[in-house]
Amino acid sequence: MAALTRPARPPVLPPPSGRAGFGGTLRSEFTKIRSVRSTYWTLLALLAVSIGIGAAISGGTAANWSHTSPADRATFDPTQASVAGLFYLGQLVIVVLGAMVLTAEYSTGMIRTSLTAMPRRVIVYVAKVVVFACVAIVVTSIAAFIAFLLGQSLLASTHDSATLSQPNVLRAVIGSALYVTVCGLFAFAAGAILRHTAAAITSVIGLLFVIPILAHLLPSSWYQDLERWLPDAAGRALSVTVGPSPEHLFSAWGQFSVFAVYTVILLVAGAVLFRNRDA
Amino acid sequence: MIEVRGLSKRYGEKIAVNNLSFSVTRGKVTGFLGPNGAGKTTTMRLILGLDYPDAGTVTIDGKQYASLAYPMREVGALIDAKAVHGGRSAYNHLLCLAQTNNLPRRRVGEVLELVGLTDVARKRTKGFSLGMSQRLGIAGTLLGDPKLLMFDEPVNGLDPEGILWIRNLMKALAAEGRTVFVSSHLMSEMEHTADHLIVIGRGQLLADCTMDEFIARSSGQTVRVATPQPGLLAKAVTEAGGTVTADGDAGGHGALTVRGLVAAQVGDIAFEHGVRLHELTVVRASLESAFMELTADSVEYRAEGQPPAPGQPALPGQAAAPELAAQGQGRHGHEGRI
Image (tube, rainbow over all chains, first blue to last red):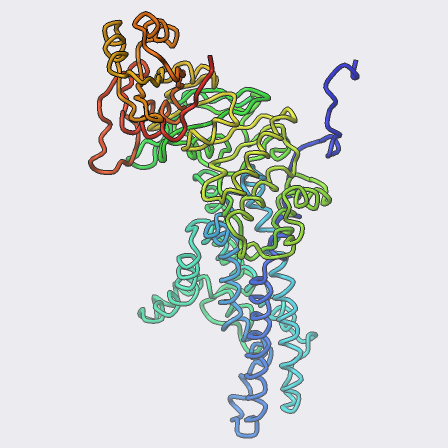
């Protein structure tokens, strides 16, 4: 019978089985993030500022150690000093990268091509979150550990340097990487909600940097009640290793959970909008 | 294959698609025609689930696009060739699309070869010309070897070579038994490729017919005659109930265009009156002019001072725009066919 029908083209693809799902989309999203140069530049910038600022603070402290008062020496936190770069600028860099994961697709129009290839939007969204989170945690962990080790070697002359086996130190190093990663996810969600790179970055900077500064202008009793609910308080709580834990804050991981919950709420809101809005 | 039922979509105040229903049948090239702003792109976005309709449904083989098992193996769609991340190479762009549908990596190389972009596969698409971008977009639609292809204005902005390439590609795809659904605002683009036409204007269906039906419905035939005695013939033809317009000079002789009579009648009249004829030709109104007449009322943006002038009713319920029709006829007039 087959001979009677029109000669068919040889099949170019194996017969399909199952359906397009999460695995393929995850591979696709990884291809996307690794195949644009801006990813490498941004991550390189993250490493440079995180390690560089930590080294500058550590080196500067060591150079001035002989002039440092005993009181200041007692409160000096070598771990916090070495990973400070992640908080000061690394955070900003990851916010840019996180926001752009989705907003770059809107600004280039790629989102329409992506959603034509894979129209099940929640799968696309979750795949993007997972790929970005994995890339971010790997790079921020590398940044945090290198910044810590470099900082401590620069502080060796002070005989006040920290080791990972000391209490809270490992928590501070891993916690700073986690905190910066969650900042990136926070920005990703803002990007999903606002769909505009500049708007997303500006509003995240507003929430993470500007609101805490404005909050300081409040009467101090108000501020003390408010501080533990600010998103950036997680960073302060996680990175402290010397002296009593900060007043008016939850424990380090408790404070981290507050920030994580905010981020999850934003991510879910972003997913709902991503699913329901016209692309 | 594609079933559009009662589709409506509004963006703010503007109604882009209004209660639109049609179907695209398997194994044919279906032309999707309409003036700019008629709602063609919106309809395609709704088919692909990029936008959600306010009312109505779209199904592909009975399923919504988003629930197709492997969308790229069923439908290859290109709406905007520039909708790519310019920082990504052509190869990686296609790879990330192929991966979502579990298509083998070798397909990327194959489709790049097919569209002639192998040499620039590793180049970033930022530097691509419109023609190259179009080829890349088409490569993407072919990744999954789909049986249905959808292109939105594929020749827009292309140079003649690119236009020819796209035309030949569409013919080749149709010859392989695939369904091709292609939009254009130019009738002339469809004349060579489409079997079936869906014409919309202001988001509403104006015509859904085969190309032959469209030709038959178009503003009808005229007869062109050249004679050394135009005055005599014009008088006789008018007496017989025809309308005559002088067509200017044809090789030293008067040429007339006759409406309302068929060629045989004109020939008989000339014989009876002893008028010598040098030419007797049936002129089919061009599809371009038929399309313009059909859409004259629904053109979204029109230059000032060029209103859709009333004229002879060309299609039922449609007013013709004579000056536009005449223009189209001059450029695309088809002769013969008897």
